[in-house]
Image (cartoon, one colour):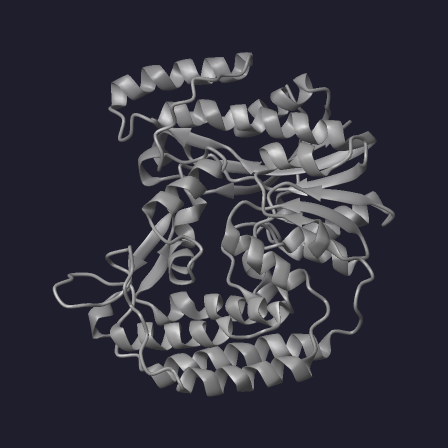
Length: 424
């Protein structure tokens, strides 16, 4: 139905964020999802010009906007997660000076030492250690050190540097906690109750992060881009924000990777930082954040009955209904999630189409999925939705073969991750 092009050798090694982990500025926060800066550069080389205005509907930690800014290219971007929005803002800022960073680091070191008592009460029962609890994310000494740092940072009078040091603190939280990122969620580290990290060790990890990465990268920055993509970054849901913030027929290029249809709530991945730093203060605020995310997960039981008119999707949903009854569903919201994911995809494609110039191009990185031993060909369903909105599907580029869950492996095998190349 669609032209598939083999990019497995070209894209296979550059479609993961972990290639950014040693790259200046990109490395400031250990992001999990997304592609590397090299993927963006490969597209710019292919386009062959830099007189562009770009759009990134799913900013994440700001990889696309930052790399485009470094190349002198304007980019509008959207991110609904407040932590990721902050990380992207901080990475896109180009007015830092090493003198100011050193000065504010001294300020933090003095102020954290003057805090006698910290408040370790929380709406989240397992966040901090206390008597009678069976599990806790932070031991008492670690929690105390983290909050002393947080209090000192909040006393920084310059918002520019308050945000910078908040990201530095966020970047070490998982390391000093009792948790690790385990696929779709956070799990407890092996023998976590035996971990005896001290307050001094937490302070040292924070100082090391600032000195070995932030100060080094700021000091070594060769030049500062005249483009300021920080001012074009919005803490908004792109499903509505694109229409609100961007003029019609103004975008040359879209580079993006939406959440995959993998029943994963990306809010959960960063829940430790969201709770610790006050981005979410209670369960109600977490639910509100989840309600604003793309419907790729089942952490909320979706009540919306909307469905799009798409033959390929309708056939997929029918097959899932049959397979779910035969297999026994582990969650009765799975099929609703699949249906509403593509409702959201249609909304995104529709919004982007209005903003693209004639001849504008979109590189849309997404992966196929599987439930109840039924393949969901996300690449082709998205392509068919985009076609109906007016795009030409130039090709689907095969990027990587991803592992599926153990229960799907026998019948499905691997799942194709690809890049849909669209043109208006």
